[in-house]
Image (cartoon, rainbow, N blue to C red; front, side):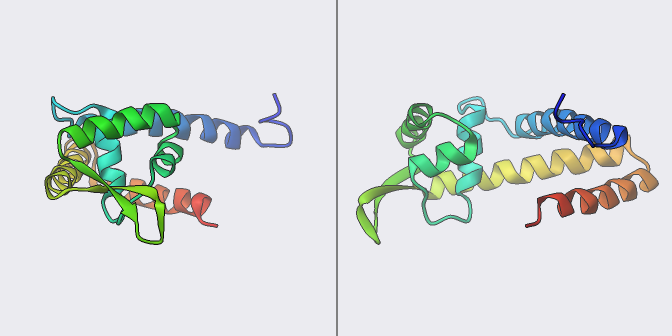
Length: 148
């Protein structure tokens, strides 16, 4: 097992547990704002487009870990619902950018708010103040892992 070569047992266990918990937590958070008429990948694309003037289908596919063809279908479904629009890239007219429409932005922001409210509510219900402070401290540690 190359993952454990030269790595302490505690680092291996922490790695396994962080990956497992984050995966489950991510699914629960996403589910907290799911509208019946859009899929999880569609909701994820809407959330990713907040704060962007536009991304290509390839950019979205890479960011979401999807095949280009799957992202094309996801974007087409969102465009059909008028939640995203395709427009020419002003810097390169050959490229099409995917951007939120006003309705798409509203839906994405509502989803973000619902996810935040769900997580805060669960932390309030299921954790003590001391545990919440531990979560805050742990996030600072994990943040160091993702900084370049």
